[in-house]
Length: 238
Image (cartoon, rainbow, N blue to C red; front, side, top):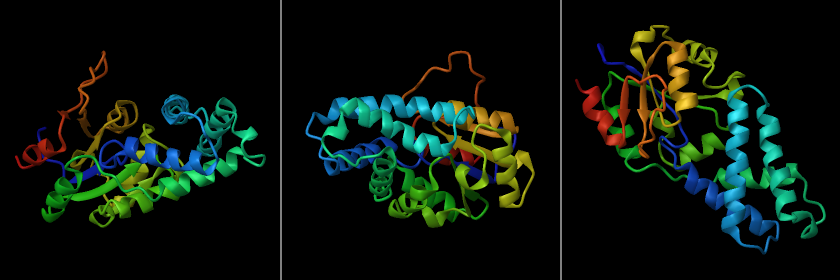
């Protein structure tokens, strides 16, 4: 990096919040409520497979977030034959119960709170959350995780009407943060297709949080790549 960014845009799930753990607990509680008696692990694997596919479709603009919310539970209900357990079990009901359970979770990625606190103490940085997550749960989860108050803005795709990786998501974020100086921005995120590609689309610096050491497979190289959130601190100190 030629210049140190002063506006830090953090993705939420997979970067600061441990979505896998939150999803596990929320789905387990939801299926227990629905009276599901089968094995949980296969049900979780099926849900994760369809959920990932639907989120990718959402990122591409192929489906709305409202369809995403319910379609995954319609598919899960049919796969697990939940209708035979409880007669009135629509995808809308399942989605509502799941999101209620998800909102209670506050699990963080290792060292996330430590890193955010230290960056917040350095007054030269302005931090914001930029997430494609659902507004019904993201605010509560960030509060439960103890990191909500360290950010100037919580920018959620559902609220501004456009999602990452569309460059307009970032243009709206710049306006909300009060600066259109792209040289001063950097996005830190774990998902290449939405976070890093989104940053590239918007013309800002990118930092790929890649704890699983996923290969780039021909994708453009991000400005920075880290495998542990603590690596961000010395990089921003120089």
